[in-house]
Image (tube, rainbow over all chains, first blue to last red; front, side, top):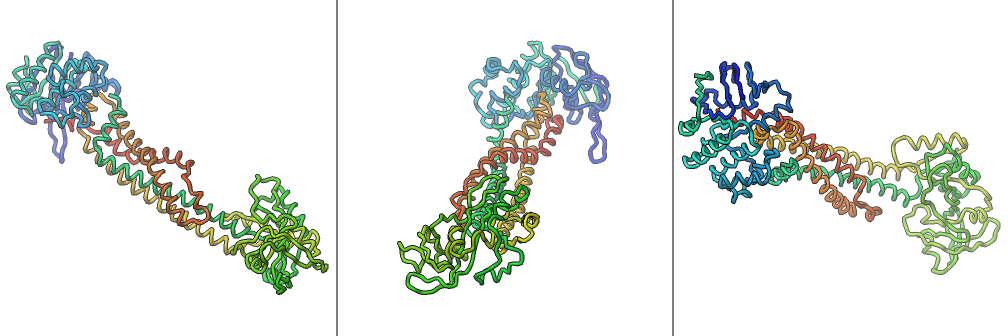
Length: 214
Length: 388
């Protein structure tokens, strides 16, 4: 379903060049649950964002269902992110002026209807908090809200960038079980994590070191 | 989620910056509306004062010595039908309110107490309607036959309910009903009497003769007075136009000064307000870069992000322009009443500029948010959202 072919990404800062990804290739099949692990600065997030259509690689291609993601026009590239990809970030990035319900609703997919949102809110123990604002939530509640926002439009691939990085063990466990549920229902998960326990939920590990797969 | 709702919610959430931006629009709109309204009031005031003071252009027979005109009792005259010829001319459109007048010193008027006075007598021909120009309200003295309007100084010497008597050049005594006793400050007529032209011509035995035409020329420095001069010259080469410049200039200068200040103050306030707003919009982009990143990660287009910022500016511009219109109109009315004696009651909100305001201010504020909005649309989502 997803094919990453020889991608290289370099950054230049203050005159020095840093290679975040160096000739990385991998395949992800539908229903895979892969954990991308490696030390800080190894290129994990860059790889995730490259797959998500947010960072264009300097070299190489990313194919999704046989189509090069970076050869799509703007409209189709946006549609790819909107319909096929769901992002979860360590910092949640909820909109502070929207309630829990509205933050999820902003996904704007047809599937983000009231019934479906309430189903997931109940499942994630957030139904009673649906009218609360992010400032009134605990970190675990915020991350669960961000998780529902990512999966509400039923994307093919969930890209989770250190989703448990700010959570205590209990909330980490809850979130990982939700991600596992998504995977069990046929979703594909790519999880970037420092946390070995979270990575253990994955059926496959992809290790990066200094921008290279090892 | 409905993007309009999203913008409104963000606007309410970031109250402080929204209110500051709104205040800048209100300030700019208030100043613009107030200055413009006062400038219009000043223009009307000038016009009203001109009307109060009388007409500002005199058309005399060529060669009339103005010193003599006011000091002797016989001056050069010309036929009164000159007024009609001018009024019916297609090419004579530089002045309005043509009024034929016969004005002379009457050296020996005997008041009811038997005292002798030198007075000014003025005979007014009905104001001529200019055939090829739109109709307008008459300005000059409208003195009915058989009646007179008595000037303030003269009026003191005539008891209430008395008639006005004057001896004609033929020795006959003429009697007139006093239709109006004029208030002080009307100029030369303070020490004189206004007649219907026909009556005065009969008294003085000056059938069909007048010695000046008063008219109202535009109170503006765009050469229309010169135009009036040349137009009169073409039709009657034996007449010349004199502007009563002291009054006209004073009022005109007052109005021009007002416009001059306005043309400085409005752009200045606008510029400052737009700069402040632009900086606040820019800071709004910095504050919202994670939000923008999320929007992009969720597949929203650059135009969606542009729209969010521009629509916010539009709403603030619209609200500010409406509030500014009412505040500016109120301020103009409040201060205008103190400044403008004649037009104070007619200073009202100018609804014609309301329409312009609700278009111009939102557009200007969208312009001030344009660069921040463009920067927002260029935010690198991966960079802002990345943990690496």
